[in-house]
Structure formats: structure tokens, C-alpha cells
Length: 320
Figure 1: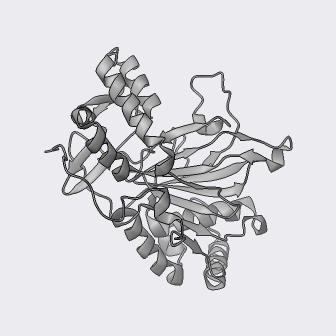
Figure 2: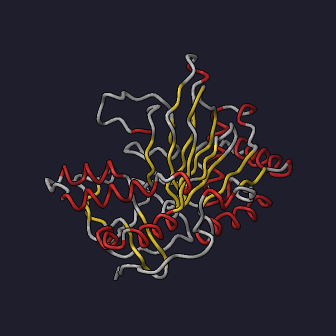
């Protein structure tokens, strides 16, 4: 049964911007051995006439890098909740090879899950949507993307191209936000444990879920305010004034500058974050007038073998 956590959280998952002022341990630079191993894995696929996504983990083996990935998997669940792989030479590969590598990497870390009705296992994050259409998902525009979590255990972002200007990636520790909520606004904490209607993609009607859940000694979290507001609208259950105030307070904490870790993802960078421990955001950006030079990232949603368990009032989500 879900209960309300009333004590401060401790450990590696509680961090702020100062935590990494002189610490780049969250960045792993792919070595020449790693890159050679990736090339070998891609050659095996071609030898066996296998293409994305029609292959398994056994078809894309990374013996040396796999040892690192086990450490990273533990860091995602038990540690700070995020890391960045740096140095994959995206400009040296064709699009089909990049997709095969990225998917194969995902298979070695977790299990890629579908991101839309079409069953796409790799999502394209580009400014290709109509900003005037309410059905356009924000990641398909160049607008500011508010802090949120995705419906999977882990989200990965591979940078193919940067924007002309802007597009800064930002991460915030959920446990740090929770500690501030406990310290400064304890009277609102219980509200986040109640059932809210959340417009999970792929459902006919929004389903009920708590936003926070403390279960088996771990904190669970789910948040994208737009989908909460839409969920209550579709269910014809308007948010009450106190619920709106609670969400406003949560938003005001999340955007505090001293909490966030900002990074400009470079081509070849791959950022992974645990959606229960880390909120992610992106600033607005200006694209190049040349379509072939526009900002482009590839997204993975992963289901993890070592993911935390979740109580019935916080039904787990891993893609569609």
C-alpha cells in the first residue's frame, strides 16, 4: 500500500547544480576500443542480413562496453539517475547504421518500448510539428519544453545535430524537489499521493494515478502538467483551486535555477535518465534555414530489468 513519505531523502539521487561543479563523472567518453566494438557489432548485423529493429541483444554483442553498461544501469536506478555517453561519430555513419547502433545499445541496457501508435521504437525529436495544432506534441516543435518525465523507466536522447541557437538540455533531481516540498510546503505533500486523472498516451480515457508513490523504500514519480490538465478535462472532472495551487507550487520548485544541471548535447552525445528520479527539459531554439542542418535528436524509451516496483495506485507505464 502506498504511504506518504514524511522524511527527507538522502543519497546520490539527491543533487543540485553545485553537486557537479567540479565533477564530470556522469560523462563517459567512448574509447577507441568501444568504437571498434560497435563497428564489429554492426558488421555482424550486415553479415547476417539483419536490420533495425529486426534483431535481438544476442545479435548485437558489446562485450567490453556491456560491463560499463551494467555500471550505468545501476547508476540510473541506485545512483544519480542519469549519465551521458560521449563520442559516437554520428557523421561517419549512414542513418540506418545509426538506428541499428542506437537500438542495439538500448537492447544491451534495457528493452526498447514503442513510443506511439505506430509502434516506433526510435522517436525523432525535431521541429516538424504545427504549433497551432493542439494535438502536436511539444517535442516536435522548437518551443520551450517544460520539465516532465516520460512514460518509461528510462529515456535516452542521441544528438545528431544541434540547433543554430538554443536547445539547452536541463535535468532536475526529483528527490531534491521532494525534499524542498517537504520542508517548505508540507501541507501540500499529501495531495500528490491522491489519484489524479492523467492522459497517458494510448488510452481511450485518462486513467487514475498518483503523482508520487513511496513503495518498498523507493520514490516513484510521474509528471507532465499538460497531461494532467488534459486528463481532468477529458474526464470532465475540473481541477480544484487547491489542486491547481499544489501544481503551481510544484512547478515553482522544479524551475529553481539552483536545482538544475544544464548541458548542451553535442552531436554524438547520448543522454540517459531515469524517469522516476530525474525531470528533463529543453529550452526553446532557433533552427537553421537549411533543413539538413536542423536540430535532430533520436529518442529511446527503455524498460529496465532493475526498475523499482510500483504499487497499484501508481500503475507503471512503459511506452504504448
